[in-house]
Length: 424
Image 1 (cartoon, rainbow, N blue to C red):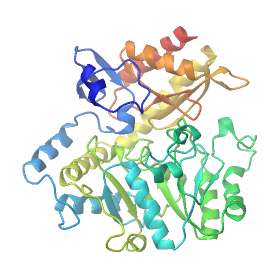
Image 2 (tube, helix red, strand yellow; image 1 turned 120 degrees about the horizontal axis):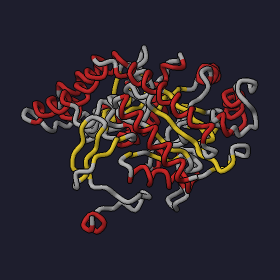
Image 3 (tube, helix red, strand yellow; image 1 turned 90 degrees about the vertical axis):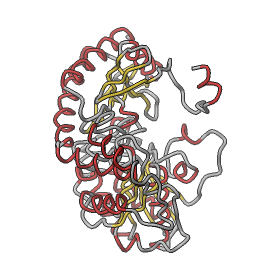
């Protein structure tokens, strides 16, 4: 660890007592001392098919013996072609062409650029509380001051923000469903009063991960789409954290019955290998001209081979359905804890993307960020890896590999119960 602290730049993350991971399998992580942990964070929703999934490992082994790198600037490669075709099959109808890159932030950057190029417009609408990456461009469309106030501006101009569909902390002081989905309808006001009526695109996460696993109401995106269509605005679905079975559908936007114009994805796409992708309509994808955009490592054949094996495994084993079933069980068990613990303000989630927002006072909804940190520390000592975050820093995040067993889920609930009791 001394060498890690000395040579690795990691000051951008507030870390707990670190563990050194020696190996991992399925939903279990093992440290150098042989201690095992139930992994309920998946490297931030990355290893959806499980750590070191045998099918993915074998695909990687076979590919590295044939071809490791092939820049798509000069050459084509078969794994990238096959993966682009597969993504056209599994993404929402009408999306056909894919640009490959290395990460979620790069996928979002691609969507922002190609949407501007296609539309001939330059303004962007995003949501308060949102998170889309840590590059200057993606931070510009991120609606969290805590992510942006590090003296690294100025950011992109011509970005307007609409209220988030964060029902537990509605910024409009309304309650669902009596609110009439005012937060969605207000996007029309944002266009009319906060822009120059030159809006190219609207970007949103179908479930807001870094905001604290905020799940919009079921009708939210259909109302949003009505506004976007009236103004001729493109819709970018940021599925970086929600994609590939995480929420109980292959892509979370499928829960809402609307089709976006672009999908940005990464994380769960290759079960741990670095890969990002932006898939869009053919006419939008064709807007890019030579020199407009490029990625040296985008479409890497090893990562693409891993992604193909990963997607096949997800489909063959119906892991989206498993995420839905296990997620419903987890939500039920966590909600059973709520009457016992005054710290629990709200339990929410979709599939195996679950957040527990902690509060000091349930009536006042006073955030409890220090308690969330404490629970994560206690859980770590008890062999359970949890995430925490949210716009108030008070949400415990549970996002395990979709292959987690029911026994491991039950153990997770038991340990979480213990940690709540000890913290309170």
